[in-house]
Amino acid sequence: MKIYYTTTSDLNNAKKISKRFLMDKKAVCINLVKNVSSFYLESGSINVANEIIMIIKTKLNKSEVERYINKIHNYKIPLVVEIKSGLPNLVYAEWFAKNAE
Image (cartoon, rainbow, N blue to C red; front, side, top):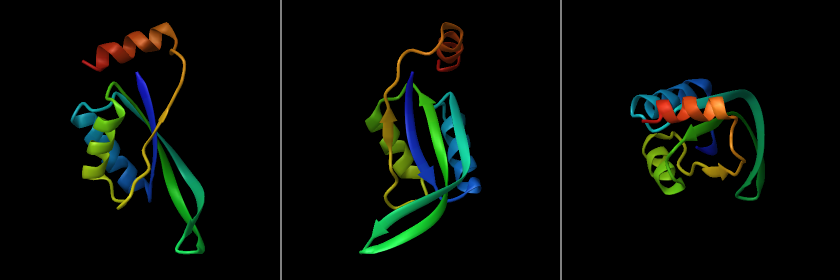
């Protein structure tokens, strides 16, 4: 199991992206974290945006996730980063493996 982090602009986009991942069997579970304030620099200006964090649990490697996200994401330049972690608990790992087929 691999875990990836990305953000999107609003809940509707996050739900759309999540459903596409799940329907196309590209992910087994996606967590959405709402009401995130993001501060960033662009063209020398400080900007603030409300975003949704997406945590994607999948068996895909990073390049596969990047290719898929770039096709369906509403951002021109979406962030995709793998979150390195230890092994999940055994019961969850079994559930994940069963549903990742």
